[in-house]
Image 1 (cartoon, rainbow, N blue to C red):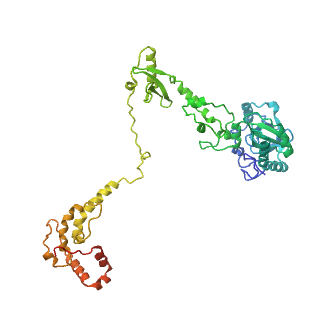
Image 2: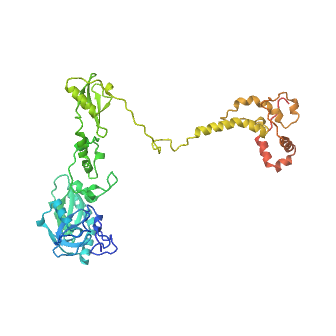
Image 3: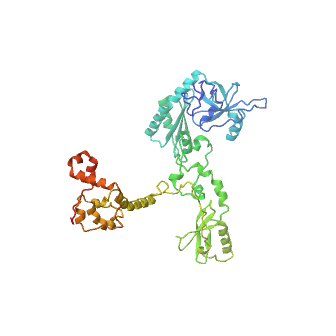
Length: 480
């Protein structure tokens, strides 16, 4: 059995740990998990009056609700599944509200007390089984009803189907733009489904409320959750709020203008009451100017010349009222360029750098490049001290480095060749300021180079020296 908390009355759903016709024992407000719910804020308050309210609000499929009288004084609470009076037979519903708040709801909805039906009993096992079997057949019946309506050629749409609790009646909800003659359709339905047929036409907003969905705001539709009265919305509402008349953005899932456009209409009308008329014109010394735009939040109006409407000038409404009063006296106002005051925007500090497009990039790239260039410029002197001038042995400067102007220092090559006689024959002498200072380990390095060049067996034994030879091959000296 089910407590009936779900909107469609699905028997597989239960809010409480115990599935009974009495409802959920753990949660007293179990019935608040469906559409158009009402919270009983008097549930924990004892009634000081001796007489107890015997009126109960019962909900059925989707957003259909009705009020009944508990004539047998059955102990009911929110979520109880009850069998109520209907015509014909009986219906099965879920209690959604009890107590003194039911009278307030009846007064709000203007429900007549003369038409109140009575509650028979709490739903027993047989009532629940018949009710659940009828709910399972609704989807198949809806598809079949749409096929029959299409075959007859009626311009209508079967939106929803609702079985009565005892399966003695089917209610078809449909939408149509024009009046529909469904006399032939009822005959077809009665022959196909073998039960009493009831047809109810609903509007497109009621259809969206029954179907449900998510709006453009990211929340559930207002008509499916709490909105009960659907007021008319026209395009003037969008014009008052300075919105572009775009049907794709202003229309909801029902195809009509969104109901939420009426929510802030009163605030806009109150703010616009302090503005001059949007058809206001100003007589200036340069020509006539007209209002082209209004900003309700900043309380400004934009004006442009009739002859040249490309340049806009914004003014506060207080200044515009003074200019209008000056025109009424027969005086012309100064040109709009002279009245326009330069805007002084307040300095804003972006602490978290939200508006900075380069906040994820490295800020020290330029400094790193300068450091690398400085290091490259200082490398030739260090290499000359440590390795005896590797560039002189055949390796030129790398691309992009500023060592190219120092190519005139290459006469140092005769001193770095492996032939000891080349130093005596070469006539080029190194510059004293560019001459590297020899270290005490330098003779050993030169001795190892000469041994490696004379003994081929040592080349195989020392692969590092082989790589050194391959990387820095000796060059012939032209002056030798």
